[in-house]
Length: 385
Ligand SMILES: C[S@@+](CC[C@H](N)C(=O)[O-])C[C@H]1O[C@@H](n2cnc3c(N)ncnc32)[C@H](O)[C@@H]1O
Image (cartoon, rainbow, N blue to C red):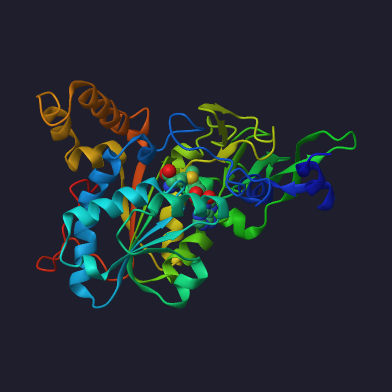
């Protein structure tokens, strides 16, 4: 019996998808991230913006610098740049190196902090950051909450990895869609208990009324019960500051549109995607799009202020990507193959069908950021929606 069957048997033969997704991704022995099996980048399981090269980090830093400068100007003592879910540590390394080169006046006060649940990935991040001269360390959410400081949290492709619960319309009501171990050892899906009042209230707020709103029997999707607790956890680690979440997502009207039966969950491995979520347990990445409306609605309950969302392609163009592409057409310090490779990287970051379709979602703590106010050292992001 493989480990997932064993785990289901221990649970009485069935479980909601959220705990199953948590095992498949985060189990320290078997999980895709927890075991360290994941490989990032073009030669690995999937590509993320920082795994393509240094361009993403360089452009992103142009926005992070004024936000960190504003925090430094209004506070005393340490400030933090935190990355939650840093994967291979590529983005943290690129941002850290970029900060050292730019040497802003508050650099001595800055500490880079990484929050990572997978022990093997923490080790890989440590190795990558060995040459980095900027002070950096790893912390747990509980350690951060025990001593909050001003800071800026980056969550790049983190929320899409938070476990989601699947649900379906069954006999005219929303039910949990559970993973079930059959008597013959097969693993499949079956309706579980009706969703409780709290979950129904969340779904109603996202445009899914308790009677299904005209969707057909058997219609399925997913939602993220881990999102609100995660937002609260991140907020507890900051005395003031920002959270910039970058991920693929849809507003609720699109996420839960009647035509989108089946939801957004995908399994990824070796640059392939499929909807077989339970095959080769722990060997595939599992990911769901972020419901941007849910993030916006959950923010307030976790003491965040929603500051808006912008497409990555638009944000990066505003931050100077077009000027960089144009500069690459003339000879410069890079030779021709290097110029072509850099151009290709920049184009992939803005292509709306690739990484340009990601969303930058910004949240702020109370009073930490009012872009209307002049004279506070705040720079309104050029990509502001
Ligand atoms: C999809 S990867 C993104 C990696 C990286 N940010 C990138 O874009 O290349 C998700 C990362 O988040 C980590 N992770 C998942 N859940 C987490 C949690 N609750 N807290 C901290 N890290 C988490 C995973 O182990 C992995 O490093």
